[in-house]
Structures are given as C-alpha cells and as structure tokens.
Image (cartoon, rainbow, N blue to C red):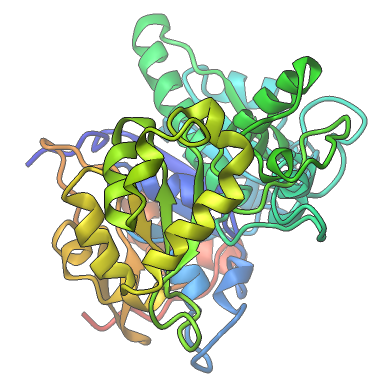
Length: 425
C-alpha cells in the first residue's frame, strides 16, 4: 500500500532526541530519511547509556527506526561537495545543531536556498530570538524555561521536571507538523521555506493551561486547586498543584489496594459533575447528593480534600483495575497508574502497533514505541535503526547516481568512512 510520504526525501542532520523524534515520525509515514553522521562516531547516542557493550544503545535504536545512515565529513572539500549535491536531491533538510553551526559549515539559509529553492530547511533550537537565543538547551532546561517545571510538583516542594520528554520529543513532534505543513504549502507556491521550533516555545505550548491560570489569578483564587480549600493565599504566579486536575473537573491520584508495597497501586479519579450522584452511591455517601455542602460543584470546591479523602477510603478497598472496572460502568472518568512494565506487557498496545518488537542485527530483539498516529491508508511497519554508515554506498549510488568508480573515489578522499560492515539480515 502506498505510504503517505513515500515520495519525500529527508536529509537528516539531527542527533540525540528532539530532531530524531521528528525525522523518525516522517520515516514512519514513508519518507526516505537519510541520516547523515560523523565518520567513526555517528550520532552520540549510539554510545550513550549502553546496556550491551559495543552495540548501539536503546537510546539510539528507539529514535532512528526506518532510516538510512550515511557517513559524511562536511569539513572536507569533497564532503561539502557531496552535501551540496544531496541538498539538490532532497525535499527537506532537518537539523538540531547548536546555534550558528549550519552557518559556520558554510551553509546559511541564503546559500541553501540558492542551491535548491524548493528545499525546506527545518531547525530545532533551544530558544527563539531574544536574550537566550545563543544558549544551548537540553530536555530539563527546556521544561524549566518553558514554564512546565515551575507548575509541576507539590506546593511546599521543589519544582519538578516530568518523565515525559516534552522538551525534546514534544518539540520534535511540533517540527514534524511544521515540515508537513511546509511541504503542503510548497505544492501551491513551488518554494521551500525555513521551519523553526524553539524548545522553550514547544514546552510553553504544551503548558498553555498554566498560562491560562496565570491570567485567571488576576481575577481571584484558583478554586480547583487544593490550596483554595485549605485557605492558603495564592501568590502572583501560577502555583504547583500536586496532582490536582488541570481542567474544570477536579481530579486527584488516590491510593488503591496494595499501595503499601506497590509504588503504582494508584488510580486517577475525576469527580465529574454529571456523574456525581453515582459517585456518591458507589462510595456509600448517598446523602451528599442533596446536602448543600456537596450537591453542587461550587459547594464542593472548598471541600475537595475531604471529598477525595472519602473517595480514597473506597479506592483502597479495590485494586486499581477493579476500581476502574466498577467506575467505568457508570462512565466515571478514571485511569490506573500504569508502570512501564505494565505498558510493555500490554497485549492491546502491541496489537495496535503502539508498542512494537524490533529485531536488530547486533542487539537482538527489543521493545520500542511505534507510531502513535494511525492512518488507515498508510500503515506503518517499524523497521530497525541503521548501523553507522550502513547505506553510504547505497545513497551515493541511488540518490546521486554515482558509479562504482566514483564511489571508490569518494572513499579514497576521506569524505566518508571506509566500506561499512553490512547488517546480517
């Protein structure tokens, strides 16, 4: 079956996480992603957090599925020549270098646009124009500077970063949308353009409800936050709210049966107004349905700690899965806290391709995430990540049309690595 992006060729100069997240998503949709790596070392994550000696790390393999790898030394004259030719043959160049690196390589936007006016150049940076635009940024820095950390954690504790990679992977997802949008616009304009996403901007976009709350503070306390019911005054900035819901329906994480020994024996429980009567019946408080202190959402807001403490008395008598089964019968919003182990073993996630098993020639079989976006006419087959430089000769031959002698000359020039070890299929 035809792939959504099968006629799109991506020149992938990304590394670590943010950029590879973007290009992997495009590769899953069928784009020919050519990952350009440094001879000898490649993407730094090949050797980071290795669990098996001398084997590409899971950090690398889980971010570079469905791609081809070539090695290219862009500091050499021949390397620059090859890069120029690849730019002429590709639709998109994606990079997440530090600020100014592409310019120092001799390829500022103006030069690239002259080489190939149709080429889309997509970039991830830490910050947009402003006082910090030249600063280097990593995941946790992005979470801190984008507003997520200041609003995560408990009121009396330190700001916290989340385990979800909203800085790196979140920005990569934003960039992928920008690239697809630019490709669509090119069908009308015939021109390439620059696409940029700053990690700070991406995190702030994902934290927008907290910017909403910052503005609400000007008009009074945030009544759905626990501290309102505790009579604690609000400051001038959106506070950390623990596990309070970020929406209009109050919610909390509550203990379930076995919480004393299982760190994930919890459930998230939302007291949605439409099902309040059923909640009261289930937890054994039928009088709350008509009691003036509990019958309406505004009356409940200053009493949320008491209400959730009572609900927790009930959830502690059930496992998280038993509680979910009972609550879902009445459409009461809830969700168990699922560990990574439980997710890895979830048969339904494997059936939908959200979790996939991949076979690697040196690593063997491992689990990875699959494409979270499902297209009915563009099914995804997740293939393994490439070995370093595995497709150098293939790309020179297929993309640039080089003969065997020209390929040999390129190797002799030192612009690429020597012959690469081919994967054992």
